[in-house]
Image (cartoon, rainbow, N blue to C red; front, side, top):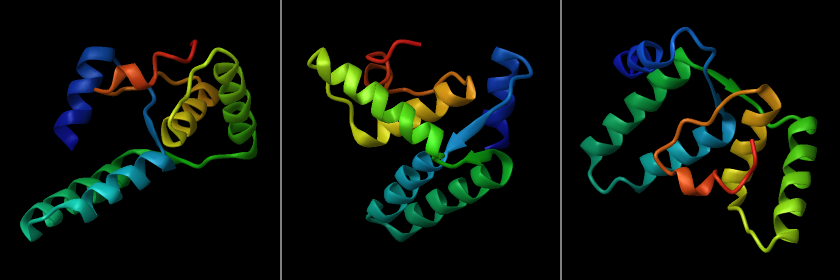
Length: 112
C-alpha cells in the first residue's frame, strides 16, 4: 500500500488524499467475496493498511444533500448513477478532491 501511495505522489505531487467511507464498504465486500482464505487474508491486510495510512471521510449531511442534487440532475438527463458511485462522487466534490479510479465511466457522467 505504501508503494501505491508513493507512486501516486510521484505522479501528482504532494496532494491530499482520502477515501470515502463508501469505498471501505466496497473493499470489505471484496474481502468477503474471496473464494480462497489466503486471498481473503491478503485483501484484509491491504484494506487494513489502506485505512491506517489514508484518511477516511464520512458521508456528511452536506455530502448527502449534494448526492441528492447530483442524482436528481442526472436523472433529468436520463442518467442513472450507482448509489455507491454517487456517494463517492459527492464526497470527492464536497472535499474538492479528484476521484482516482480504474472505472472512469462510472464517474465521468458527473460534471466536475
